[in-house]
Image (cartoon, rainbow, N blue to C red; front, top):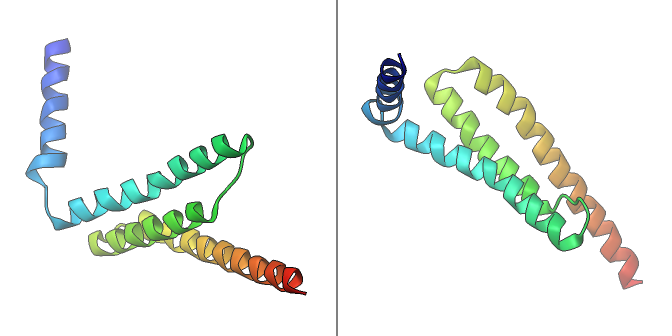
Length: 112
C-alpha cells in the first residue's frame, strides 16, 4: 500500500513538474517565488524593527509577483487565478500609491 502510494506520488510529481515543463511553467514558478519573497522581506523587516511592519518592498514584491501570476493565469486560461490576481493587483497598486502620497506629504512638512 505505501509502495503504491509512493509510486503514484512519484508519477504525479514527474507528470506535473517534468513531463509538462515548458516556458509557462517556469514563468509561473518564478512568479510564485517572487510573490512568496514578500513574506521573507516582511519577516526580516519586522525582526529588525522588533515589531510587525510592512515595508514598501512588500508591496512591490506583491505587485510584481501578482502581475506575473496574472499573466500566467491569462496565458493558461485559469479563471480562478485571473479573478484573484486582478483584484489583488489593484489593491497592491493602491497601497503603493498611498505610501508614495503619504511620503510626499511627510517630506513637504519636513522641508518647511
